Image 1 (tube, rainbow, N blue to C red):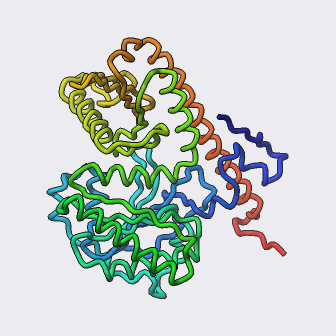
Image 2 (image 1 turned 135 degrees about the vertical axis):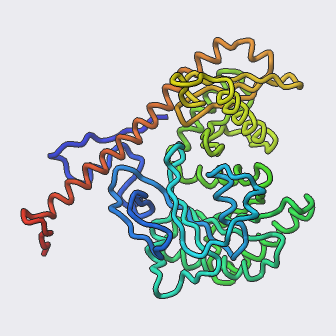
Image 3 (image 1 turned 90 degrees about the vertical axis):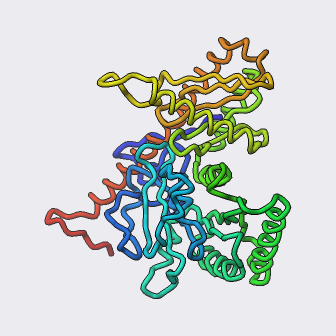
Amino acid sequence: MSSQGAKYSEEDGEDEALAFGFYDEDDFDAFTDADGDCDCDQGVLGLRDPFSSEVKPRILLMGLRRSGKSSIQKVVFHKMSPNETLFLESTNKICREDVSNSSFVSFQIWDFPGQIDFFDPTFDYEMIFRGTGALIFVIDSQDDYVEALSRLHLTVTRAYKVNPDINFEVFIHKVDGLSDDHKIEKQRDIHKRANDDLADAGLERIHLSFYLTSIYDHSIFEAFSKVVQKLIPQLPTLENLLNIFISNSGIEKAFLFDVVSKIYIATDSSPVDMQTYELCCDMIDVVIDISCIYGLSGDEAGSPYDKESMAIIHLNNTTVMYLKEVTKFLALVCFLREESFERKGLIDYNFHCFKKAIEEVFDVRLKVQRSRKLLSQRRWSKQAVPNGTHSQHH
């Protein structure tokens, strides 16, 4: 699978500056740079030039008070123990966080307090939704969700009118205290009510995705994985590479993991089993923990996860788990039979080819970002005049 792009030079027109075919100019409306100065005290945060060097999708966390929005963020991206979230104070202002410092996953999370009316005239909700890639609405499954469904409908309909390209994700949260039958019943009821409300409003074309989640198991990580995957433009390429890799290596299942967040960026086309995903997360934890405890010490110590990181775990059902470093942020975790693992040399050679292809995919992404930055600079230089003011166009 390949992508063709256009070369960029000063003589080329501006339409050719958006090279490599991953984005066109309309796509920029759905993204914003996350490096602007802001803090949680600001209501609606200012957006910087969308043609900046980094493209970071924005994810909104919304829902009623005490539905668990802040707890989700802390557990997934700050490694907070689920039990510690019991002592979190309620969010009382809009907080924005960049998830990009030590992780491959790169986006903004905006956490909205449940009690705030973001459709108040003092909030520019059009600007908020215009730059959003995904909207996660959290519903407390252990509470009466009539009011939550009403707020969900209002939020989705307003957001869709501003930006029809938003991915709408509904987390049916706190299901750890429910039986399996009760979970399915709750999901079916919420799914039916939410879609019936949209149908009554003539908005059947709006698609809602539903997930059963809890911070006390891996379901919240799997749900966030699926949300983030929709925001990765290279996802079809990554899935195709994984399919080629496993078919030529005798591997049954493979995941490409972000090591820090334990969100899987991509997997092959075979179905994902929850237990398999949990084993992958546990394996990553084991590798990091053992590296921290028994790794190099003192000045020789580096990151607990580096280019030498590799692990093999033999399960008691003749299955082998194999972890290899792809980049400083990504790991490939594979499941295969013991007889297939006897051809480890072939697997390692195919992995080398896979790793090289992954590097090429993200080299293209970096070139796209540089093209944007150059285009932005050109546009500003064209508008600027010697005294520092902007020229007027007639």
